[in-house]
Length: 108
Image 1 (cartoon, rainbow, N blue to C red):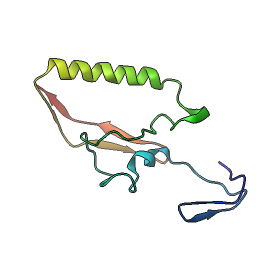
Image 2 (tube, one colour):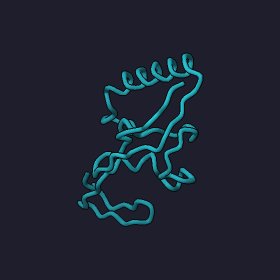
Image 3 (cartoon, rainbow, N blue to C red):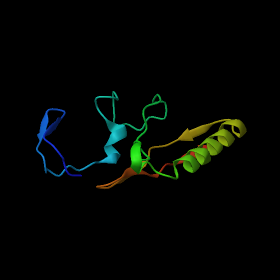
Image 4 (tube, helix red, strand yellow):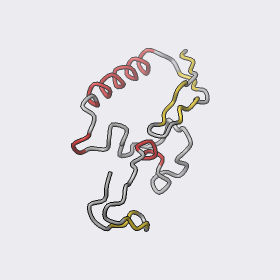
């Protein structure tokens, strides 16, 4: 992105014409929002999710399908199992996206 006017982001001056990089992977790890932003915590409360682009004209068109699929998966898991044990995640780390590459789990 290119700044169209002089501005400031969290105390950092941005001059008109400066290039600004957006790191979507850090949006759900904001230390001003979460107590321990880097910790994988399934009990973390609901937050404004930015995984599909955060809204606006670039919002992911497939977000509805992805959310529906996840809702169906978790509904089946929660209604048809006695419990789920989750291990430590193996993270995918990149310059543009971060995510969970592998998450060991046992369903009983």
